[in-house]
Length: 93
Image 1 (spheres, helix red, strand yellow):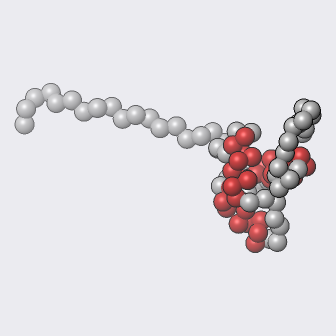
Image 2 (image 1 turned 120 degrees about the horizontal axis):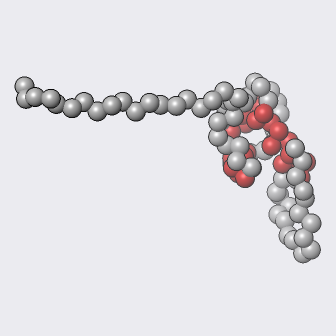
Image 3 (image 1 turned 90 degrees about the vertical axis):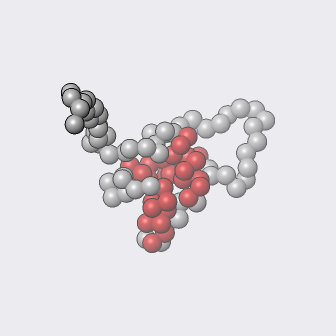
């Protein structure tokens, strides 16, 4: 999924910030089957073990939060919990 770049006149960006293409790469990375169920901390560590560096852990969290991806990413349903019924005393001990 591609996003529109900031085209406002006079917009200032930090020269250390991620480029549009780098941000798209961070967006697509958690969708990979081998890291879909990992946290951004684990994703950055796994990629570092493989010799890849996309961005820092804080940048990964920031971008995933920006696009609401820092949540349950599996295709399965989120587990639901059934509230247990309360026990009621029918007579004294």
